[in-house]
Amino acid sequence: MEIYKDVILSLGGSLIVPDNGINTKFLIEFEKLIREKIAEGRRFFIVCGGGTVARQYRDAAKAVIEKVTDDDLDWLAIHATRLNAHLVRTIFRDIAHPKVIMKYDKKVEFKEPILVAAGWKPGWSTDYCASLLASLYDVKTVINMSNIEQVYTKDPKKFKDARPIEKTSWDYFRTLVGEKWTPGMNVPFDPIATRLSAEKELTVIVVKGDNLTNLDNLIEGKKFKGTVITPLKVDASFFDREYFENGGLYKRFGYTRSVVGRVKSHLANFYRAAAIKFFLRPKRLLDVGCATGRMIRYLRLMGVDARGIELSDYALSRAINLVKPFIKKGDILEIPYENDFFDVVTSFNVLEHVEKDNLAKAIGECNRVAKKFTLHKVFTEENKWIAWHRGQDISCVSVLTISWWKEYFKTNGYKLLTKFFPYLPKFMETIFVLEKKK
Image 1: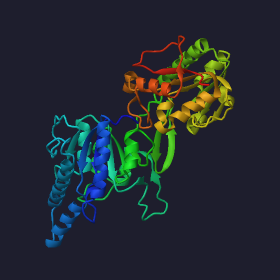
Image 2: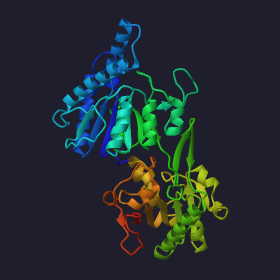
Image 3: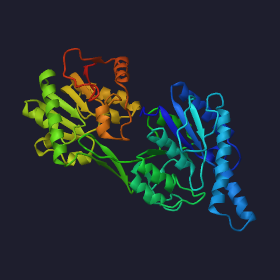
């Protein structure tokens, strides 16, 4: 997902200073990765945790005196985060803002590609500070570099039936971490940071911090391992799919049942069907990711032998009865039809849900089963009108620019259709019609 031009990293203190001392090996690899990403035009906000140093000071205080206040325990941890932050800023001295951020009450103007930050107040974790930074700088995603690969439904060390979570909502995540903060608590993302992130509609991605190849994949929009915690805004007249994790059960939601939503969907699908019928003139057509089959219905009424494949069981269960015989379950990465079986193959709002590593295969599969043309409607960065209505959809992993897509098609040997086809303005939608690649 190429949204990571501004990257907020909540860097766990245990990555910087584990139990056996400062981890210089990790820091060397981390420094190399960040400099590579900066060379690509990215900017980083790095919020450092306290880790082992914080725990050692807290434990020492408790060993000397019987009772230590939560405020004092927090202050010890805060100073540990500042020590770690100064170390990180020193490593990036030539490209980092000269001051470590220790307050989050106002925006700091800076020109450097790195801003290093630490803890601020008692009761506020560095996770919370990272969420504050995201809110201040209007960055919608925080990457939490943790000591775990994924969040689980239960503690996997205690429960054999604990299951890893790939995507979940803040509502469900709050049932896992609770509501109360205590100094030094060990959770993937603490309760007060969870509450703030939910209020600000942020997305937090938990990954294992010392797996820097995985972190690189995440930043580059490639397939990665981790847990995505996101606000779910489901307005199915603009979403093709939404992903939801509830208690470890993976589901897909979509397709509004409101009258307004149905009317919008019918109008959009009638317009699409008419444009395809009269400008591309297919006798036989496949719609990849056909949802409930509304466009297929209109095309069949217009005399086209239209068929569809759909990955979502939920969408298939709600398919229009008249077109159910012409829809089957299938994936764009492995289309269940022979070569050149259709005159035209279409996909609407599918490719942005495909990881960049799989785009070549997805587009190639559509080309394989098409005789004449493939048509792809893709959600791009220029589609401001759609983004405004659509809100945030974490399943969009390949939101790129129109120029990026054109260059990608050209590099991979595809030719854009030269004859007229009705395109709406780019702030509304982006459609690419490709001639069959031999």
